[in-house]
Length: 139
Ligand SMILES: [Fe+2]
Image (tube, rainbow, N blue to C red; front, side, top):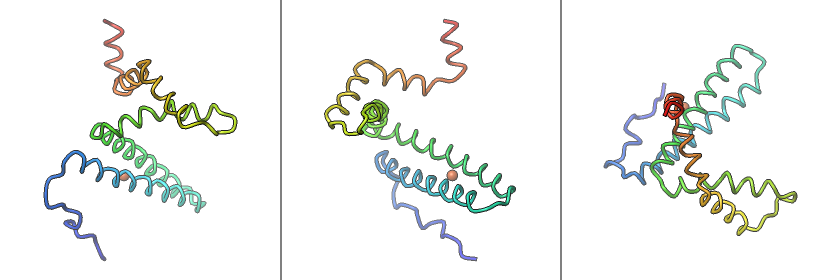
């Protein structure tokens, strides 16, 4: 049975954070590919046991993908900035009935959101745990 050589993907040196972020994007893409593959197989079978197992594993891949994305966000400040701006930009695009929104308006929405401190608030909420939120309530 052919197996992948475990040293195939070794790099000759330790990676910088920028290089690591690039490598993690490939890892995140592999998780997306796995999700799509498992979901396609769920759609392609009537075997209920297989559907359950594939759905269970596909959910794990979604968690893996989310963890890679979060790690990339922490390693790549430019990516973090784009991720923070994506929500307001998307809201602006979706608020248009035609979907045609000038690029300047989309960028302005993201800048306005950031200036209002919404980015920092969302970032704080994303990093919060139940324990930390309870601690804040007790303060
Ligand atoms: Fe995975």
